[in-house]
Amino acid sequence: MSQTVGNEETFVNASDRNDDVNLAGLRIVITGGTSGLGLALVHAWHARGARVAFVARTPERVAHITKELPGVAGIVGDVSRKDEIHPIALQALGALGGVDVLVNSASSLGPVPLALLGDTECEDVERALAANLLGPFRLTKALLGALRASATDGRGGVVLNVSSDAASTPYPGWGAYGASKAALAHMSAIWNLELETEGVRILSLDPGDMDTPLHALAVPDADRSTLRRPEDAARDVTDAIVAALRRSARDRNPEREALVR
Amino acid sequence: MIAAHAPIQRPRDAKLLVIHAHGTLTHASRRCLPALLRSGDLVVANDAATLPASLIGVHVESREPVEVRLAQRRSLAPDDVAEFGAIVFGEGDYRTPTEQRPPPPPLASGDTLRLGPLRATVQRMLGHPRFVALRFEGSMLEIWRGIALHGRPIQYAYVPAPLALWDVWTRIAAVPAAFEPPSAGFVLDWHLLGELRAREIAFATLTHAAGISSTGDAALDALLPFDEPYDIPRDTADALERARERGGRVIAVGTTVVRALEAAAGDDGPVRPGADVARQRIDARTRLRVVDALLTGTHEPGTSHHALLGAFATRESLQRADRELAVHGYRTHEFGDSMLIERANIALASPASALTHSARASTMRVIA
Image 1: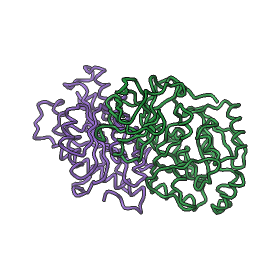
Image 2: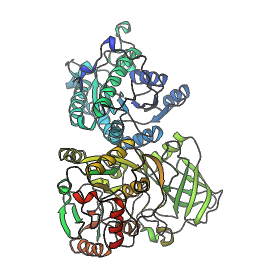
Image 3: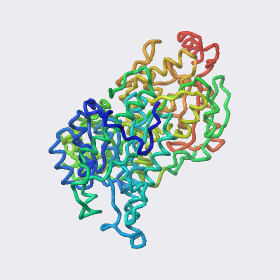
Image 4: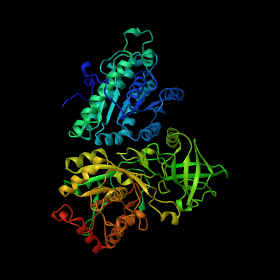
């Protein structure tokens, strides 16, 4: 059995591409679904037949995406706010009738422009932690029963938390963001171990520097030609999820054919 | 019994009264539950998440305030969310005891209720001035959104603080289907599930739309529980079959699990997986086909929950249990203490479990 769980090792080789895998019937919840990697994932999973619910803060942008992609459930909500987590979870579970995959992609940079830690307001650190650590923690916890049911059913039960190389490398100026993403990666690794016997997998994955609105906020003068397209990063994320779904289904019930083949 | 006032799902001092198959009673700490189960047993719980089923608003025709409590739904299908059976109260909220709540303004089919962002039409009256069939306007998503943002968990006057959804969702809550929490499942947490596994006690779930426990009206209460849809995963049906083969007991966590499993059991056959509706009442006359023991809250005599206990224990045992609960200060209602009731006089998980089901049945009849 592969041991690639809980951290960046979940990257798959290019030869393991799963572009042809049919995701029809899988139920996925994606936060940060109106920009960057989250948006690319909404498009990718919708195109491949999955049942998609996405979460984002701005009603107009949510409405725009749902108009563009009929059948996708758009949920307006802010995962960094405690009171909004259960309404978000209820709408996602209601619309999809359960959940097989959760991608926590919504992220906050902390101070904009980036600041040295000594110059960072406490409130900016709190904001980064609320969006990048507490949000994924609370939403995962609210959906954990549904993810367990999915795993038991042989479907899957996978949470993918979007991480960053700033989680492992200390870049000056990225303190609030880096610390919150490091905490998210570590929480993912611990939770993954705790849930091994339930068949639920909690991964974190660094998709690399992408050409996204968040990156533009952090590095306004970046040479965009050196950055990955979110669509390419979404493919890596999807591959990691598919690999984890297969492992989860196989571990749980070796005799039964997995939903994802 | 004393009402449990605080919305704490797993108080450290929670108590457990055990009614053994042979009628003796013992007191235990609820934390010791796994030690009361046996290797080979199968624990089955209801993983329904609880809807925020209380919706306040206005009866458009009379401009009178109302509280609507969603109480019944045809199926658990995600898109079957437009039509509900509902109990309607007049002005006020849960702080007034249910039986003192004023009736709603006179309602008639075709009337409109404006409930926060939701609009609903009274499709027809269901034989009582408080009981209506409602139809929400809008798309499936708009209805889920309206319920999520405007609804509150149904609650009663004995819990003074307003409940949040996280107060009523069990640790294993999955599909939102219950109108009130399947509260026997409050005992479960991830640590306990690990402990069961370590003791080789199997665990499985089903989803059952646990209904409301009180309408404030004796005539309506007499109709409880309403017909309730449920869904039994294939994996759970398989686990039940394996437990039966190895002579393990089936322990239901909550009366809703009893209702679903017994509804899905064929005549002495296996439990059928899939979605259906539980319509039967379970009481002292019921011949249980599947469930060997029940973990449940402490219920007041006279309620439908208490009547269901009659399928497990003799009237004499239950009367002694009621006295013990009172004498030892057990707390009642959804955040209260618990009971574990073994089905009367059956030598469970012993060679005698090789008894055929019909032999079990005749034993039950003799006791009843």
